[in-house]
Length: 60
Image 1 (cartoon, helix red, strand yellow):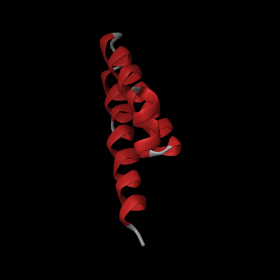
Image 2 (spheres, one colour; image 1 turned 30 degrees about the vertical axis):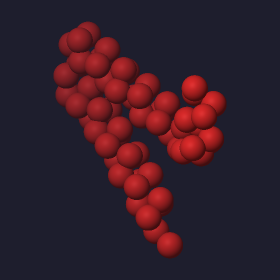
Image 3 (cartoon, helix red, strand yellow; image 1 turned 180 degrees about the vertical axis):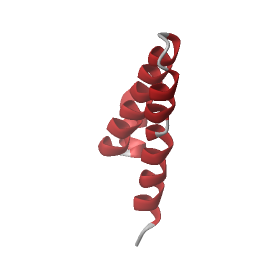
């Protein structure tokens, strides 16, 4: 199941999606430990990476 997903989207996109998922988890953990401003800053990295992925996908 995961192997089919990786083949469909590509290895690099899969790695970037794992990075985005881990950024969200880390941001949530930092938020709940009380550093709200740091968590918001780190949480903004995820949509930035996703936007970069979209830009590179459609750039030709």
